[in-house]
Image 1 (cartoon, rainbow, N blue to C red):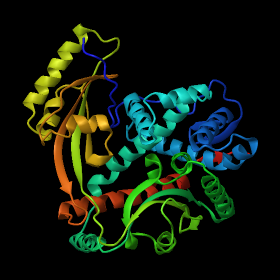
Image 2 (image 1 turned 90 degrees about the vertical axis):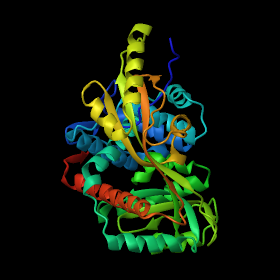
Image 3 (image 1 turned 180 degrees about the vertical axis):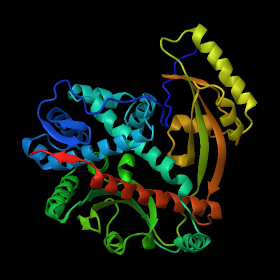
Length: 419
């Protein structure tokens, strides 16, 4: 029988992950709508945060980090609950992919992160819940708002002019940590916490890990990375600080309208320097579910079905129509992803495919998986096409809607944090 490939079906499927469940609940730290965060959950999440960031595991550090960890856990529960209202869930394969992506970004061998958690007595479900919140929230924002986002011709013209001028400005490759201030009474505490993170980073703590564990920006899912930005794309307050920063340096906490930013300058380019090229790719992932253990008798008919479907579907629209006749097949679309940011296994599978072509079906943990390319767009940041500018503006609006939606959720939700 074919070799089992550990492949991830990276867009949300229909399997739930238990939420903040521990063997022993103990004291209740917070109540978030119909869910609880126990003392055991908090202790395990603190251990994960401290281990990831490279901080010393001392009672003082745990106490300093406790309030921020609780705030992040509350946000995660709100995101998961909201997504479930729209029947959006994260599959085990989605979460496995997210874990592998963390390992890839940190140049770790596959499986190392799980072993590290096990050796430090941290339940894997703590990390999985964090991954689940990131996955379902991204899909929820896409599903809820993508088709309603409007870009006017005037917006397109102004944005195109800015991108054309971008090559004549300095460029900054940034990463961020953002700590939100929900109320004025919290400001002193949040500022103190921001300074603690800055001091720890300057003493050797890992910026990316701290961002992933504590930041309340959408970029936390990418370890804080926010890509290249031009000087005039930055908030004037941030721009002034960044322009005087050396590569590899971290800013002091910077106060903006909604909270405190900590920025890391990874690299910079002088005005006029080439920005490089990339490809935006849209593709469909089709999963033919199978139950383990796999056998020749169960796998071969499904492989044949996948190959037949690939040969019959000459484009993604036809593929979507054909799979509707089989309710067991799970299909998800990934829109306008940067080819450079895809994990190496997927880049290798679909890199040489033209729009309308499908990859060879492969056996994954959950069954047979196949990728079909819908569209490819080569982009040059110095000469962006109109549709490429539109996609960038849509993504910016979706990010703003994400921030607004989470603030509204927190304002309306029943959240009780206990002393």
